[in-house]
Image 1: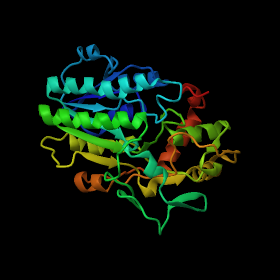
Image 2: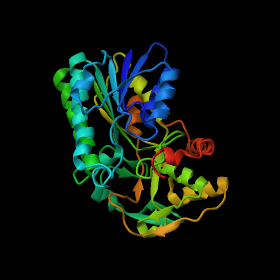
Image 3: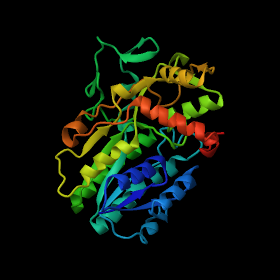
Amino acid sequence: MRILITGICGFVGSTIAEYWLRSHEGISIIGMDNFIRPGSEENRQHLQRLGIKLYHGDIRLQSDFESLPEVDWVIDASANPSVLAGIDGKTSSRQLIEHNLLGTVNILEYCKRHAAGFILVSTSRVYSILPLAELPVETVGDVFRLKQDGILPAGVSEKGISENFSCVPPLSLYGSSKLASELLALEYGDTFGFPVWINRCGVMAGAGQFGRPDQGIFAYWINAWIKRSPLAYIGFGGRGCQVRDCFHPRDLVSLLMKQTATGASAAVRTVNIGGGIHNAMSLVELSNWCTDRFGGHAVFSNPTPRPFDLPWIVMDSTRAGQIWDWQPQASLDDILSEIALHAEQHPDWLELSGIL
C-alpha cells in the first residue's frame, strides 16, 4: 500500500509516518511539505533517515502535485492548525483559506485523478463557538466542570462533545475552513467514487510538538515552565480553570490502519477523536504537575478574554469506539512525561518553535 501524507514534516504528520512504518510492514510512505514552519527541518532529516521520500511542495499550488507518483491513500495533515489564524496578524485571512480550503481542493483533485482514498485530519473547532462558550460550568477546586443540574445542549454529556453538537457558524475562520473542507471531501468521494474518512481531532500532544500556545498548549506550558519563561492564565477570571483533553497522534495510527484496510466500510464517515475525560486537565492542574516535577514557577493572571477561547473542551470518542474499536492508549501522565523529557533534552525548543 502506498500512502501520501501532506504536511508530513509537522508534528502530527511526522508522528503518523514514523509509527505507521513501525507498526505495519508492506507500506510505502511519501510526504509533501513546504517546510515553512519553524522546526520542520528537524523532522525532515529524521524522516529521511527512516527512508521516507519527501517532496518539497505547497498544497496551495496545483502544479506541485504534478510530480507526485500515484498512491492508494492520502492523509491530509497539512492545515494551519491555529484557531487564531487569519486574525492574529501572523497570517492573513486569505492565506488561511487558501491553505485550509483551496489546498484541500487540490488534494481532492489529485485523489480523483488517481482514485486514491482520502482521510482528513480535521478538528474539534468545527463546532459552534457560542453554545460552547455558554456551556453551564462550575468551578470545582481549580477545574471547570459541567454543572450536574445544568441543561446541556444536544451533543454534550459528561463524556464530552459528540458529533451531534452544532456546527452552525460562527466557528472561527479556521473552524469554518475545516468544516468546508470536510463537506467538499465527502462530496468528492461520493461523486467520483473514492473512499473518504473525516477524523475530527481534539488537542494532540507529545514529544517534539512545536511549543506554541495557540497550537500545542501542553508542550508550550511545559517547555516554558522549565525555562522559567513568563506564563499567564488568560481569560475566565485569570484563574486557569479552563479544561482541555489531549491524546498522542501515534494513537491515530491504529485508526488509520483500519480505515485504509481493504474493504473497510462504515455508514458514518465522520468521527471524533480525542483523549476524553480521563485525559483532561485544567491549566492549574498542569501547573501543579509541572511544580511536582520541576519546582515552583510564578504564573501571572490576565482576566482579559481571548478570541475563541472556551472554558471546557473534552472530546467524546464513543462513535469511533463503536465503529472502529478505537480509544486512546497513551495516558495523560505518559504524554506529559514524554514532553517533559524532550524539553529537558532540548532546552532551545521554544526558540526552535519560533516563540522566543
